[in-house]
Structure formats: C-alpha cells, structure tokens
Length: 85
Image (cartoon, rainbow, N blue to C red; front, top):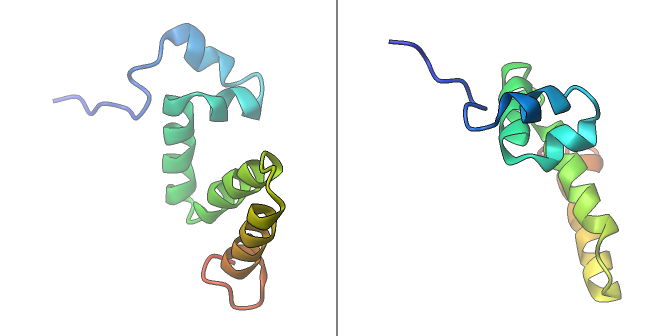
C-alpha cells in the first residue's frame, strides 16, 4: 500500500510554487506541514516555531501584548537553557 505524502492535498501547481519562496511554502497549510515534517526529521522543528512566533509578534499592535509575546519568545527560544533554544 503506498504511503500518502504530507502534501497530498495540494495541486501540483501549488507544490511547484513552494520552490519559489519560503513565504509561499509557509503560507500554504500543506507546505507548512511538509516543511515541519522535514524539520522534525532533522531534529530542528523549533526553528519553524520560532519563526512563526516572530511573524505573529510582528503583526501585534497592542503594546501590552507585544511585551508579553516578546517575553514568551525570549524565555522559550532565546535565553540560556531555554526549552526550545
């Protein structure tokens, strides 16, 4: 029985577009899932989570939320001995 790949729902055109830019890949749900699967296989999934947290941070308008999100990113990914350093 053939194994389904993680981006089986995307059209071939969408899949080919992923090679053009990282933003195109990550903007597509299936592309993001495929990239996350790859990062898991390389033991570096935290990199995409860090990137996504930073992208979310850039869109934040509330100064109270900015401080909170910045602290969360720092404590989760950046500080020495962070859980996902």
